[in-house]
Amino acid sequence: MTVKTFTDLTGMKEANIAELETIGIKTIEELAAAVNDDAKAKEVIKTLSGVGPKTVEKWKGQLAGEAVAEKATKKVEVVEEEDAEKVYTVKAKPELDGETADALAKRAVINGRRPAFKRQEWFRYSKLGESWRRPKGIHSKMKRCLKRRPNCVDIGYRGPASVRNLHPSGFEEVLVYNVDGLEGVNPKVQAVRIGGTVGVKKRLAIQARADELGIRVLNRMV
Image (cartoon, rainbow, N blue to C red):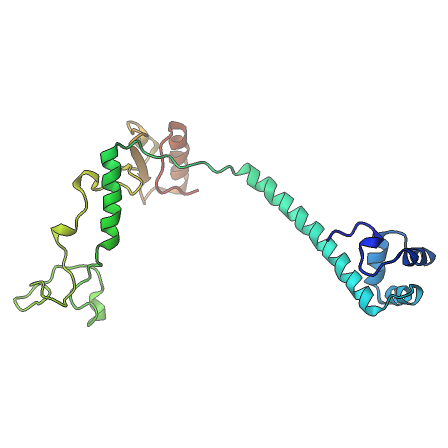
């Protein structure tokens, strides 16, 4: 609730407004200062008829809430000004034909149901780790693909060959290490990935040049 006049306060009557004027309180700001001062608050309670300590406490809360609301409004306005400078831009999408789009969707389904391939006896020896290694040994049950054994990597788990090695967005990835590497990149079907050894200064230059050419950078720094 916004407190603009005395009548907006709970329990405030017309007679109380005239009584406030007798002790020099004519505005909401003066009343807010008075209820926050113990001595003034006692004087207000003695002067106003039908007003007790509980009513003054309610006024104090209402007036304090008004001040907090004003501060919150100022903060929101500042945030809106900051957000206005940062305009969201939609990421570039590749131009795909129907068959490629269907193959990407099919690959996503296959990836979702593909089991996690873990190294033989990863659960028994922590030093082995979970990274996949082909099982060996003439007595290996996992190598023979027996029941109740972990899954082994097999060609049947692969996705469609037409979209193999493509980024999930559908772009073909091109690895670049400098600005010159952007030359010859087709922004309609290719996107660039900046090498891990590239420094911050050169990385920012690559990103700026890619924005000018309309090329999507898959691992943007900002």
